[in-house]
Amino acid sequence: MAIPTSRAKEKGEIRIDREICIGCGDCVEVCKDFSLEIRDGKAALSDNPAFGCIGCGHCMAICPTGAIRIYGRTISPEDLFDLPPAASASDYGQLLSLLRRRRSIREFSERAVEPEIIEKILNAAVTSPMGLPPSDVNVLILDGREKTRQFAVDFCEFLGRMRWFVSSWFLTLMRPFWGKSNDEMFRGFVKPMFDIFIGQMKKGVNVVTYDAPLAMYFYGSPFTDPADPIVAATTAMYAAESLGLGTCMLGSVHPLIQNGRGARKFRENHGIKYASREGVIVIFGYPSVEYRKGIRRTFASTTFMN
Image (tube, one colour):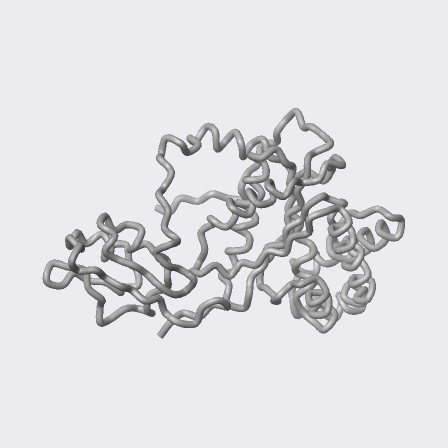
């Protein structure tokens, strides 16, 4: 039995070169599928794996002699690379400085985001941890102000056709089914958002994607761990910050293009392959403003278990 994704239905194939295996057991320790065991002093395939090799590559990456190779589920030995030395990594202070410097930017200069910068952002984002390999995150890239504006125009037209969704009669009808908090969110945020997006776009003002020179929509497939697109988008956002770009996450588009024939048509028109439980748009560009202060944030709660 193999765990399915949109990219792989079969389990990975584990090949072991017993001639160079030294029986250290590192591969057994890191394989959480229980696909490996030590038998007669050498690594061997287990008779009782949990699901079958998921292609994480941990065993292949930790083996000191190269005795293990994984094939399938989009992975092969050719995907291995030497880890950068620890001394080349950012320390905590440098990382915290990067995180603290980032603010949500919606005001951008006319400068386009260069193709090589886009490539660097994607190279960073693809390293994001995932719930299950191979990654089922998809990325729609809108490279250019014209593309991000047209996407916003199309979205506002789509919203205009579904205004009933935030009408008073529909919200009153749905309140007993989706509860008080959802009712408050729809009346206090979603309904005004419809009015603002559509109304401002009629005036020629784009407050959906802010005419950003670059936008990326991270979304999943029916198989995707819901956290995966959000993690990848976050990695991309901080990578862009390190490259001198301003960024902003936009969460308002994704939920509204998931259900119904109109949403399916919108996705098809924009090359979006799947409806997805979670997803988010990140906009990028060179900032036209400069913040001088940061703002301290807090969690709703932090609880240590006794």
